[in-house]
Image (cartoon, rainbow over all chains, first blue to last red; front, side, top):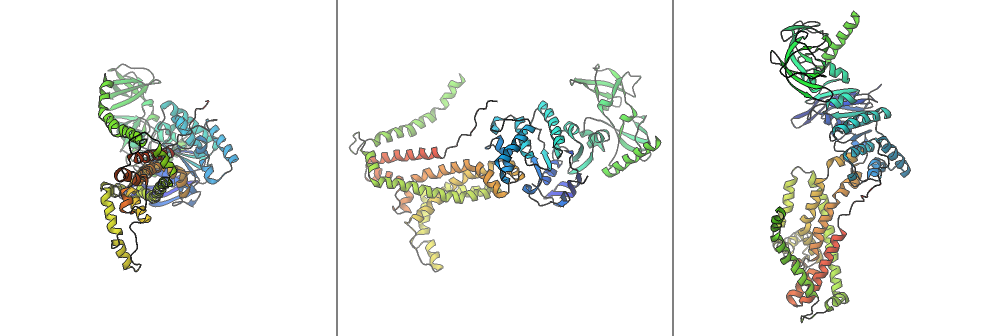
Length: 366
Length: 272
């Protein structure tokens, strides 16, 4: 499938500040993409470049193969759902949703049909005559989505649209957005700083930091194989320990050697080791691969979040289904495939090549 | 207890309102029903509505106020719009506000210096070969000076309304396919209307009763309601008639306020 949007070395600078540094990305039609990163990482800037509110200082933006660097927003086949919804307060729900069609001079019948269809899509049937001020935050959110989709965009841009909603409503909207995207089959590009949201909704995630794309991949790839400390830390909670990769499939940390599943590095290369809290099991002291002392635990509904320290005073986060005793010494058990290795200062291309390499090796062995 | 104490804080304001707003209004109303000898009469109102002079004067006041309002609006709106886009908006706003700190009469005298027979404007006209013109004591001169004086009061509320406009609404309109002209018509202008209304009130109402300018610049050719009130109180000493016109003026003000009021949204309760 051909790309619908491409960024080729797109950079943006304000005076001396580099907001974006040579971004390359490819968006394919019909998928749900997420730009994930902390605030100030440049993710909203990318969205604004796609929408046409900003123009790149360098590089090219292509839409279906055509360069669109300076095409104004109203001439682009993309629509945006704004963070604060940006609904027109003096227009009712109907007129808000019909705004784009009114501008284009569509007939009243055509408008009415489309507005009904869109309101049905976002489950707001019959709300056409309501004023924006009469709606709850969640309903306003739905109107904003309906208004953007009524323009029949090829790409829908969503700028942290769920950040103002409460937890339950956010979960519900995540599911709904995902199902709307699948039903319409158009491309969604979603901006968020919430890793959980990104993992739950996306086909493909771009993790951003400091104006650069640090890693991109499927949610599972990014969660299982974070490229570096930043991604590991940002995507879910992680225990990150310095270690040494003695040889392929053997890593040493905390003074002990562990069997693992990573390879393709120099012998005795210093690395960082990632162990996810949910991959750690609490077992008896004798059965554990590591021994820790429990410091604290908090009940999170479906699991206990336990913090502990080992004898070298490294902090550990563990998720367990059963409670433990504070002050108790316990063993930690994990499987070789739970150990994720990150090389220091490895860029994405080299990382991908290495992952590819050892996946092939493994296949050869089998 | 707390509420009882805080009620006392309103006392100075209440005194002020009673002494300087309610009492004068009451006196004005009573006075307007008195004839020159101090007896109760409806004659003042009869005179007002029967003699064409007063009605013409009222019409004149309304017409000039309308013109001044229009002129200031036409100048102020684009200027305020451009100002919101400038880097140093606060500095430019300062320049707009600055002249309002100068006494009205001083500004009027400055214009006499400019517009007089041998004033700067005529000197310039002579220089470029047009020759001196009669500028003082014309309707045009009055209009220019009145518009100059009222301009900041039109500009400030419009500027504030435009500045408060959420830029994401403009982005949303563009995003939905509106070009810059459509965005202006559909979003920017409708949302700055509150500022326009405030500006119209702040210019139209005071202009109704402008009177010193009519004499100094307009040479008493432009007779407004303000001039008539001044003449009746100070020259003819017919306080009754002066008060009557004062009441008419107040009614005109309330009418203006009513016509330029904020329209309630069409919000209605729904059966859902």
